[in-house]
Image 1 (cartoon, one colour):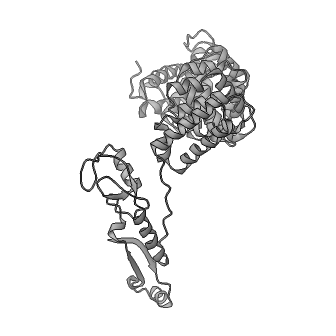
Image 2 (cartoon, helix red, strand yellow; image 1 turned 60 degrees about the vertical axis):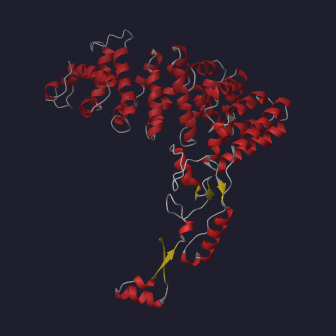
Image 3 (tube, one colour; image 1 turned 45 degrees about the vertical axis):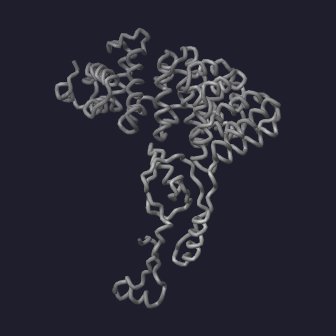
Length: 451
């Protein structure tokens, strides 16, 4: 078999051939890879050869993918694997590296010596040592062991999977709770850095990380000045509040939590997009099941204007999160008033429809629907209230009517479809007052049924 690596001879003769238009086949060299250097699955040069219980050798990444798909047999022999243990084939890997060195003049790069993946036994052993050190209150030993776990995770995704599967998240959550509030922060920062990829952490881990002591410590990090620590803290908090409403209720009661999240959003995606996304998710969970009092607190902190400023040029995921929070704030009267008062609201909502995603469409329509149906406070939404007419006319002026028609034509979910249909009926009552819209645009020209 022939490898695709080829080297053009840099000789004057070859240059003359190229200049004269003659074929350059004679100026090409083909490098043959020994068959036993190739992975039987991908036929590529092996970078980390490992041997299974059947005696066959494969590239580690290839056989991992094979096993993760649910296969329990050896790809070559089709024998059932007695164990999934993989033994590094150091001799073969050294031969491959030597071959690469010998052919480096042909453009072949030497494969690096791979790190041996962490085993379940090693993870369990470190788990036990961390728990023992925590019970003794041995801060330095815990710091040393957590740093080791973090280094394992940096090596490969395989290591991360092994660490998570062996309940390390529960262990670190307990350690975080134990040392929360202590003067030393290095250990807590290490734990937060690891917990960002450690979920799920199990019910016991949730109870430890969701305790009042742990949550107060998370908020303390959110209020800090170190950007990395704040990013890790808000990422962990986002995953925690997404698991159970009781964590949402607990974090709302902690002084400074709401202000800290708004502060991160105020800094904007340009400073740290990851932290902004996580903060928006936290706020979304807090207002989704929260009272109007909680929503009003966010409104009073100026969140509405911040969200609209972010929405101007936000990328997809941040745009969806921003619209989701705005939609939730519109459930309270104070939130609707602030949203409507801002001159950017209607133009941005209409602009984002059909440009971001189906979820963004749903949030945008829902916000406009809430503004039109509930602005006067009675929820009648019959199109006769003066404030409601002003909102409808503003929406018409920025092209909402046309966007809604397209939404119905291209298809949308039942929930959003009902709101779009209702809004179009209200628009139709006032569209004749708008000179910039073609008067021939009416429901009789639509194929969809609005009854």
